[in-house]
Length: 188
Image (cartoon, rainbow, N blue to C red):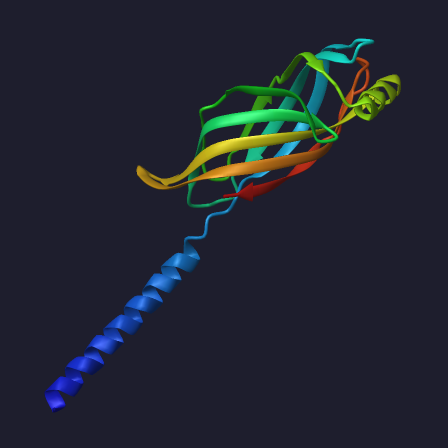
């Protein structure tokens, strides 16, 4: 019985130490989401017709900062959408792929285009007209990115980042610039 007790004690100790090692590795391996901001926002070719059709090209300078010290982030697909009061005005799907190393910033320019977008909601159309008279549109920018966190050539789990930037103010006159907007980032 002494030999059996020693073996059982050894197995339990081995399992406990192995479990603690796995827990420490899991806690130390927590990946950080990147930080996003809209550094600059402009608009070209703005035209909102009397029958509520919008034409415009939104020019958005998006900055991403990789806060993770271990992982590089590979952006496979990026979609940037422009909203006003929950209504989609424009989107851009021509971005990516990008690779972002530890601590690096990536700045990319998105150009979502609204081509003859009909604004059916009369309240929203009125809001857009009022903001246009004040020469400053208040928008919400959504970014969705399919990403992979990697260490060297070892691939880690893939994620979808959902980034929401609000409010993003876009000046309609050439002299009015925008202020930087910090974005909220969710990873799932």
